[in-house]
Amino acid sequence: MRMTRAQSKEANKRALIDAARDVVGREGSRAKLEEIAERAGLTTGAIYSLFGGKNGLLAAMVTDYAGQFGPSLVDGLPPDLSLEAIVAEVARRFWRIANDPEAVGQLLFEGRLLDLVLHDAELRARLGEAIPSMETAFAALFTGRASGGSVLTHRQALRLARALKATMSGLGQTVILGLQGSSEEYFVDVAHALITPRVLGPA
Image (cartoon, rainbow, N blue to C red):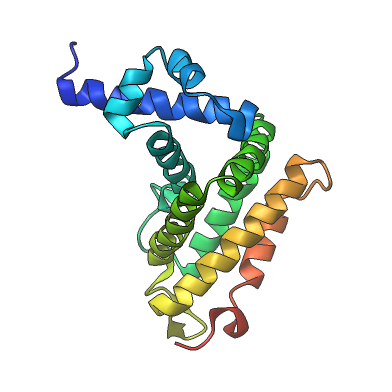
């Protein structure tokens, strides 16, 4: 089936973002526009047409990367889960990510990405926008769920989302590096330990 122009445009964007991620994962701030285009099977002209240039493409890559740890991480969960149940599922999915065969490559990419954004103020700003936006979207999963006899406000849900993501990411890195072989249930126990009045804060 032949793709429409809009579908072709989106497919090319996806190919370029994926190619940028591959090249940045190897080269960091030394990533070349020509190599990214070649890996995607496109021309540098396509990068300028679709993203306005290298920085536009890299900014899209940063936003795309940050988005994978947002609400899509828990797609398909029943809407009536308790707070404890949904937090446990988030923890389990972080554990699976850490134990995925591709996790080492993911960690390497994150290191190269830091190298990239530390050398570019515009990309650093884009990452600074993407992370709070992702946390806000993640917090929507927790807002309104009952805990300890009360219902979480958005403010409390946002504090929990930040603590949960930071803690699970840190635990995941130790597993990827082989520093500890934490079990899935340990991830769940740690995640549940964050559901406290001290972490949630005032309503």
